[in-house]
Image (cartoon, rainbow, N blue to C red):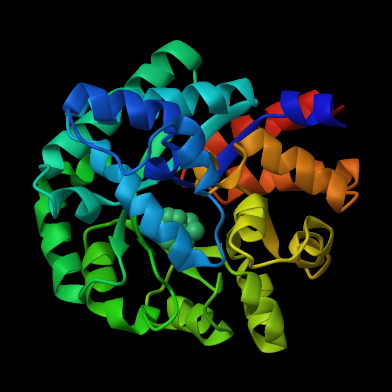
Length: 332
Ligand code: HPA
Ligand code: ZN
């Protein structure tokens, strides 16, 4: 099954590019930029990656991002990610970035976006991997800061497909971001939000009803509410599920009890994604392999998951059809 998974065309729809910063690159950038790190070695960084919950992870993730200063850094970060994705048979990615993590420490928006877009162009030319950029607002900061970030992004909006909502979930419900999501929608942007990772099903309802999202990132806790499951299934709402992330952040105790298979059985449009692969122990392929093994996914479930990753993407209908035809040709 692993060889079949590797060759299967797949898209990644839930990836924080800052979460693909490997400790080796973190150290290399710290040296290049003369930034000091609170770790003595790559091994010391890796051994700090034991998290009890989302906030434990976020604290270390925001600290790691501080080595990213120049356009070249963001380019190198993106190139490293896309190289790993291509090795796993990934052919398309819609990647999140957190501009506020950078602009709040004086790194201009143009440096961040410029570097990432140049890494994305490199991947298209050199790896034939296509990609789109999603700007995430940090929900632990006020909505006014998100509105200011959207304004800052204005000159770049023709190269940004959508906006998202990430960072600490509990205590920061989607309802606090209705204005900025409305403004983004009026600018023609797609909308996604993290909901139901640690937060309650109500946050998923809010993301649907108050933010009008096109996709739910995670969505695990939606399964606690039957009405919500019915609504998500009826809408064909894509859930960007992240199995190894869920394991590392103690959202699930064991991959064997991960809700992904149950989601498919309930008619939900689930996808497999890596979230923050440098921190959670695996890129896209590792998430697919470990989840398929732990849940004994069938060949037809695996094909369905691959198809969901394209039908849930923000590619054009004709691009989606091309990818689906490739999957059918591969699987036949
Ligand atoms: N959840 C919320 N915010 C995040 C995550 C996540 O898994 N990764 C990076 N920012
Ligand atoms: Zn995430």
